[in-house]
Amino acid sequence: MPTDPKALAYFAAGIGAGLTIIGGAYGIGRLAAAALEGIARQPNAAGDIRGAMIVAAGLIEGVTFFSLIVTILLAIK
Amino acid sequence: MSPTLLVLVVGLAQGTPAGTPAAPASHEQPAAAKEVPKEGDEAAAPGAAAATHDASPSSGQAAPVQHAPVEQGSAASGHGEEHGPAQILMHHVLDQTWMGLPSKHLAFFVIAALAVIGVVRIALRGYTGGVPRGLAAFVETIVVFIRDEIAEKNIGHGDGRKFTPLLCSFFFFILIAALLGLMPFSATSTGNLAVTLALATVSFLAQQYAGISKYGVVHHFMGIVPPGLPVWLLPIMIPIEVLSMFTKPFALMVRLFANMLAGHMVITALLLLIPLMAQISTFFGLAVVPVSIGLSLFIMLLEILVAFIQAFIFTLLTSIFIGMYAHPAH
Image (cartoon, rainbow over the protein chains, first blue to last red):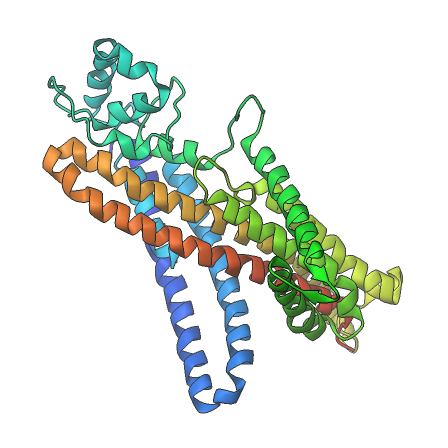
């Protein structure tokens, strides 16, 4: 068992950051795969698809960053 | 993108013996403290002081490693406190006094705002005989893009034109504030939660204004719930819709803040690798210099891209939200 109570916070921050990145990367990866497939099937709609993809990526990124800030606060405070 | 590298930051903060007095490996602390009187002239320069503490060999030998401090002189301008990596990192991204002014972020907020006004005024001068030249051509491209591709498409024809000036202001301010922050000795004003809170508040008010000015107060607030719902669903739907009304600007606020903060943190963390490695041995410190500088240069270039993307996303999402209130489901 860790003797220093801060050790648990660091531990939680590390694990939390890792889980966050797994989730964010999975989301962005699915998004990009679907968007590329869509563009390949219908190159005419590339512009619209790209715009929609950036919006969705921004939403995913926002949630990811929110969680990363929590982990940073855990690690630094 | 940048989130992946942000893990590095947490990893660095974990390995800070200087930041935690209770940590078992705290022998660096006394060693660093002992060296201050020895190198009084070194420590007189506040920027170099922090770096010297970090780069000094942990065993406290004479002839401390001198090559590392150069890289991070700007990162740590030094208070009299501890100088662990976490402290330097936070000092780099948090607000501070600057040139006698109480807040560096506020100063750069004003500078960014003045720069936006200046750029547009210079651009206006480029219109001779109705044809844009130079900077005006560049600004016009962006403004027309915002008007046609963002505002008109998402808010609707007619309504979109009304909100174009606001959206252009958002775009240019966020872009210029982020680009200003990439210059040496400057700060990103949008990397401060208060600034993004203000931007998100303006965005929120614009969303409500769009609905209220079009439908009137009563109809606007009745319109947040889609009509035709069963009555027993209303107790669930109304809180959810009211919550989502405030979640949208909140998400805008956190997204912009975190994006602006993350890049700077990653760059600082990469440069901090040098003194951390130099603590182990001189050779490691020297060996990590090209890696560290190369990576931080890459992140720096990525930051230019992020500046444009975040300005675009903030503008786009604001226009989408305005459009949702200007044309509720019916």
